[in-house]
Amino acid sequence: MLIIICSMIPSSIIYPQKDLSLSIIPLQSNWQIQGVLLTSLLCGPQVGTISAISYLIIGLFYLPVFHGGGSVGYILTHEFGYLLGFIPAAWLCGLLTKKNTKANLINYSFYTGMSLCVVHIIGIIYLIIGKVFGNWLENLSDLILINTFIPFPTQLLLCIAISLLSIFLRRVLIIK
Image (cartoon, rainbow, N blue to C red; front, side, top):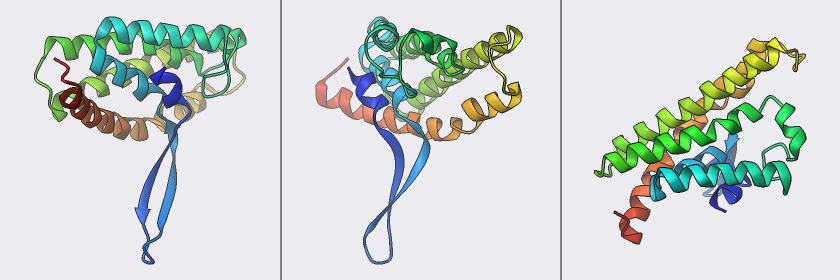
């Protein structure tokens, strides 16, 4: 459920202006990946992986919860490889968190950053396979630029934010 809610939240930076009003800068990402990683940070590798698989099943067969919609036809889009990367990323993030019980911002940011890299590596592999089989008309380098290099810095910053949030939630919810 957290992943579905996070996929609907656009990411942005809010900052004050001179007249004390707030201004919003939209970023090139949503909280989809961070929802998966937050679940893994808090609940461990099994629950994180099951939630990522459930999210894919819900998006493919029931509801349009993905960033670009949903349905079985989504498998043929170039974004689907990144969604497939949620599964091993959730497992890795949860496993690293479970092995190292010391919850601190540096460790958790490193775990989420590594997991984010796993998502993007699998997404790039999916793009390459799709290009080999002629699924996309776009240039491969353009697809990688649009889907990996442009959103990656924003997603990395959001990983730090969820690392901080997970440390706070672990203390509030008394999660060991």
